[in-house]
Image: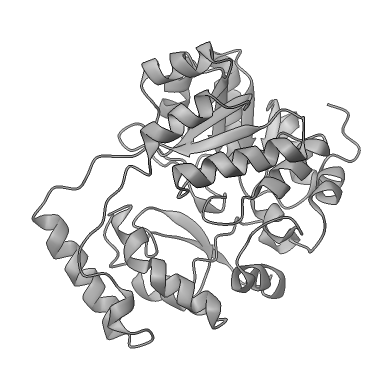
Length: 330
């Protein structure tokens, strides 16, 4: 939910409706994260969480420049958007990782979750000493086992059907397409830690099925993108609501990291040739995507969506939480 959809209003609304809302720290500056947490705590006294991206290592020089330049040339050759929207030099960032750990440790957040990697044990211990429950994510059995063996309090499991970037940890997860129910069963068999699981949720029937499979809680993302409180880009929001017949697809064409989007022209054209260079491609396509949103062009925008996005409707976050939990007393 990073990059705009996650807002303090959305997080607070979910919390006040009885859910556990998470504020996305990804792509925020430290100052913006501080102000968002301050706004959130003004809006609710309920427990909330913050999600943080774990940075990888910079790509080796040499091959990076070649792959980056080749892909940039292909995007420019499309002719849809001018060359000056595509930066000439590769950009890498830690996304202010260390600063965000400091901010969250000092905050009132009850939970801290991590994606794209697992933090050092020292970070987990520090957050635990600050009273936070740490949630780590996996997409495969090896990843689940690693979390079970770690000091983290909660196992997060994300299926291949989830929208946006999957929480795969390079070198640990095999990015398997194993069914969520079997991954939950595996986690239950090796650990007694609580399990948050999700991916592709389209409505209350999916919530019940995930709980029945043994999850402690269900994570829902895509359906909240069209709630009133979400900060989802207008073009993205309209695509979610207006094109339920479209399929979704996994692509790294927008960011250099596999993510599920509503199928569109850009993803179809560039998925095969996009190098695995996150976050370099994220920064390469940032201005193009902003321009696409401004002109209402859904064919060149990252339309992150899980496979259940046809269930998206324009409604309040509180109403959505009520619908998803209707008939289930757990």
